[in-house]
Structure formats: structure tokens, C-alpha cells
Length: 574
Image (cartoon, rainbow, N blue to C red; front, side, top):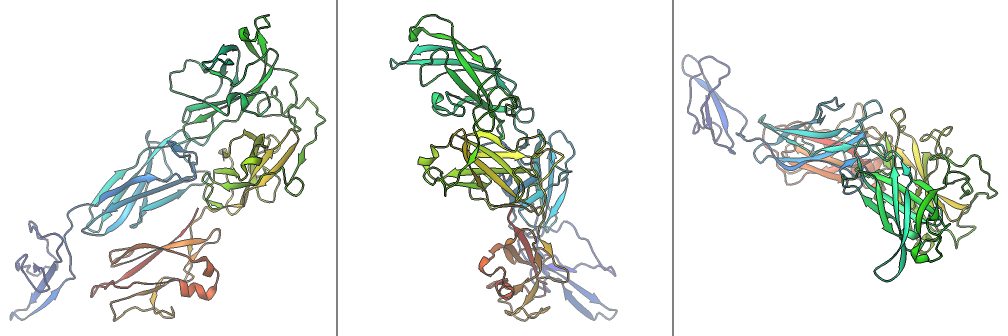
């Protein structure tokens, strides 16, 4: 046996006697790298007649793959930009990239772990040369809120050399902060501003907000003389949390002077580190003065909470002295609620688009079994000023509002979100989104104490399964009519690949294929992985599918005496 740079040559390692063995191991050869090598074996009989056989070419790769893109969690629609974690505990998306200039990457091994070495439902996933992975978990295997996860990707090349890379940490938190409220003693005082104007400074205290899983990062406060207004704080006042607060307290100037016996509405909510907001805590207070002076400049005093007998603010019995999250059940109002629409009050009703997800462009399909996120956009800024507040709900399509999401016997399906324009709702552990069902996000815009309009998103399909493979069908290398399956070809300039009917997607739809050509199963050493998007114009045409699902591999010669494998992976958008 000898080794050379050409078939039959022995210029790398000279002939060695192997006796009658059928295999041999030879060490300390110092073989050259990135060079095609051949092993030639010559067999002799007793009269020195011989026959020679040369192996396929091989080359030496002594280095493992290197990382070009560190493993990264894809947070689209699962977080708010700039936040450190995600709220969806049923869905993990990761992408990465390893490169190897000497030999192709054969496979990747993916693990997902927690810092405290707790159990995770995804300990080892073995993939081919793919560089992305979506992990979908059912309700029994959800990740744990409050846990921090990291992914480790191990990439191995055809030489069996491997390297690993770890992702940054990902915090999971699917629960909003616990709701708190304002507490005494809250005070106010009229002060002379730097511009010579008298304005009221108020000091507010609150309690009860906490978030064990990811911590509270800021509070939002509004002050108004109406139930859901923001005029006295000129919008929303933000109070950032720096970790040094002994008590929750904040002082700020209002846009106006307060007078004794004024009624103010105070609203506060908290945001945690993954961007989830608590419900709104809204109270009404009476402005009391500690001075008998009639001079406005010298007025100061306290803000007294209205705990009983507060006024009904809306036709649905919303008030500020009820149990948090509930209406004033004891009170009665003569105001009746009225739903209005564009055909009745076109001058009054703005146009609002409601989207699935946070970016306003996401498709109406989700792989999550845990959370729905929604956002909306008012397309008329002038009419936007007519809106006093938003309420949000979600539920199964063509069912009562809230059905399938809320316990309608014990929960209100509508949640007041003020003038916010996005919301996230995650289900508790005993409830999941149902695969193959359609959900709708509802936005109720209020224009007065009694008038509102309801806007709906397009149906959101829950798709939690990957495309499947048809039995008895496979990818074939064929002619341009896709009516033959070649086992051997005698040309080297092209391959026509056909896969009509191979992949099935019953819930969503396949949007693109990843295509490669290689000299080993799932390999891409001859034609690297490329995306081929489906032309939807032809998607449902039986005969056009055959015509469109063909890819010509041109200008890529196939090495003599090697098998060529064609690999196709069907993907669908979630």
C-alpha cells in the first residue's frame, strides 16, 4: 500500500508491505492538508503477478469548524426591542453559523440548558448542516418563568472534528407584574416655576407591585381630571427603577394649579424587564387643603383616596373604588352602552388596523401554544384624539369575545389598557392555545362614557407542527418534465430535481424550500444551501406545482465515481 497525490502514485508515502492483511493503520505520516490524496493497494500472487486498485480521493482536515455567527435567540414577536428576555415559554428560535474551509460540516448538536442545571425538555437535538432551529413545546413541557436559559451548539465536520459555542442568556417570563396601588400619604403643593407660573407639585406613593421572575424596571403614571385622561402629566410620566428605592415614591409638577375639592384620577402600572405590563391601577382622590387661606399661591395639602361612593365613570359600571379588575356591582347607572360604526358616524370613527404581533407586519399565524401578542394602529391622527381609552380582548373566531382565552364565568373578557397600543397575554399552565384553531384579537376604542367601536384582527391560525413527508414519495433527479427517475447520468453540467407532492403542510403553507446538493446524505459540498421561495400564484395548481418545483443546478460538475445526494427541507412561516 502507498499514498500519493494521483491515482497509482506513491509520492507521499512509499509502498509498505501489508502481508496478507485486509486493512492497515500507519501513523506519523505528516500528510499534506487541502490536497487530494489516493491510497493505492497492489495485490501480488506467488509468481509476482499483481493487480492494482486505487481508492477514491480523500484529503486531510486537522482543524474543527470555526464560529462565524454566535448562537443567537431569535426574539421576533416574542419580545419588545431592547428587552433582555422573552415572554413566550413555548417557543424557542435559534440561529448560528459555523464555517469550515477544509471539509464540509456534517451535523450540529443543539442543547438547551438552565443555569441551575434544572431539567429542560430539549437536551439534545441532532441536525444536519442547518444553521437554525425552532423548538416548539406543548403545555406539558413549557419552559419555566423566571429561569434563564442558554443554548450550546456543537458543530462537527466530516473529519469528525467538533467545536462548540454558547449563546447569551435568555430570561423567560410570561407573567406580568403583580398589581399594586396608591396609598396615603399623598400630598400636593402649589409652587412658582422658573417661568413665573404657579403649578402644583404632587408626591405620590404606591405599594404592592412586584415581579419575582424578571423584576420591575419602570412605572408609568398619569394624572387627569377625567377617568382615562393624561392632560395634567402631559402624557405618561415614567419612573425608572434603579434598584436603590427604599419605598415607591415620586414627585413631579403638573401642568396646572390644583384647587381644593378638585377630583383627580391617578393611574399607575408597572413594566417588567421583558416588557410585560401589569394591569392599570386607577383611583380617584379629592384635593384637600391644609390651609384656610384663599390665596392660591399658598395652597397645599393632601390627596385623599375615594374609597366609597365614587361616581360611575362609564356605561359598563367602571369606577375607581371597586375591587381591582372588577366593576362597581352595587352601583347603578342610567347610561347605556352603544356600539357605533363607520356607517352611522363616519365623521366620528377612526380607522384602526389590528395586527398579530408587535411589528405590524407579521403573518396571521403562530407556532406558540402559550401567548398571543397584538398591536394596533390608528390611521387618522385627527380622529385619534377622539379616543379616550382602549380595551382589549382575544378569543376563538366566531365565538363570544374572550372564549377560549378567559374564564368567562369568573373573568372580565375586556381589559383596560389606557391609551397603549400593544398588549401581550399569556395563558396559565392549565390552558393552551389549540392547534388548528383560529383566534382573533379585539380592540374596543371608547369615544365617550357610552360610545365605543370594536375592531378585529384577521384570524390567527395556531400551527404547531412542521411539514410532513408523503409516504411513497421522494425527491428525484429527473428530466425537465419530471417524468423519470435517473439512477445514473452521463452528463456533468446539470441536475434537474423534482419534489412535487413530497412535502405536506395541512395547517399553514410552505413558503420556501432549502436546497442543497452534496456527495453525502444531507450534504451541501457541491451546491450550498439556497432558499427557493414559492410563487404563490402557482401554489395551488396541480400541474404548475410540477413545473415550478424544479431547480436546475448548472455549472456544478459532479466528481467521477461519487454518488450525488440531493437534500430538500420544507419550511413554513410561523
